[in-house]
Length: 380
Picture 1 (spheres, rainbow, N blue to C red):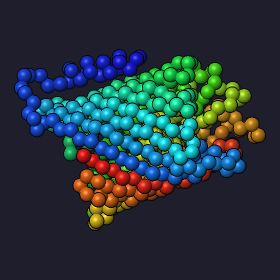
Picture 2 (cartoon, rainbow, N blue to C red):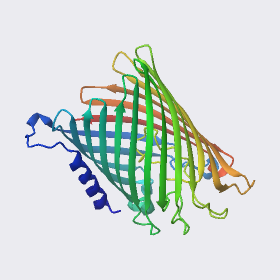
Picture 3 (cartoon, rainbow, N blue to C red):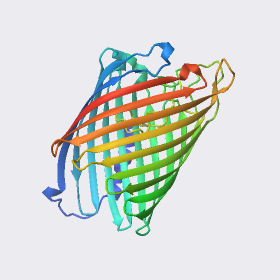
Picture 4 (cartoon, rainbow, N blue to C red):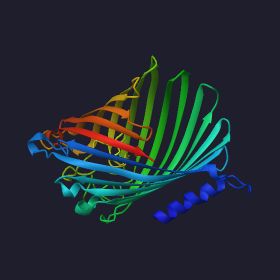
């Protein structure tokens, strides 16, 4: 599916969801806002390689700048269009430099006090001239439904179609279809528990950042993911969240032992790092256990402190460690500590530390990486 076809499909769906009637939209129902985030970061192990491989350290500057248009046709509807540009520049590692573009269209409609439907269409482009195999264009369309049964119980279902094309990798595109369901139980106040299940079916080429090989084509497979979580407000200022997620990915075929390729432990997905695309479609043939803990403390002076820790126990089914003949097993630890403070209504500052440490029965895959950053955010 091409990018234009995907966006057209989303537009058709939105037309059916838009409210009927000839009433004019009031001027105060339209708003335009912008944002600019700039981050300076120092990374001790940019490529996440083993210590004996000679980790490279470098500074990197990220920027996210964009505009958001919001339209409220009536009290039950909201349409939002958003564009974002995100350049990234390293001090000396030019092949890591890139710039991303992302456009999104979101339509939210409340059909009843207990039923809300959300339709989303996204289109993105990554340009990385000095390492062109990383370039891609992606599109996705999704629909989500949220139903509130009563004050305590809420359930939701969603479906997504995703397409990803690699212009400098001629062995096919990546296409996936996803369906998911979740249920949430509010226990009182800001405390809640929930569960979710997701099924994704994919076909085509795996992301060439992971696998650059002639066999990277027609890699059909399925991904099952199930999760549990709980949130609880401790006192008036501390929010605690614990979660567990199990992922099982099975591709139609496994690669042979002599096929050497780079396997991502998926550490960048869902870790609140805006520098990454946050997608979880870059690997295959594994079982992953993912517990996490997040603490958010809101201090009296509008300062917010955040501490999160997550572990990945990831078992690969087709990566054989040459020295031992065993299947690869990773234990990845992620720790993130951040402090954020509003300077004015529209300006805020944040400092952050991130640790990524991977222990593996394959010595070539063990690494430790530290990152220190400072960020300024402007809303206008």
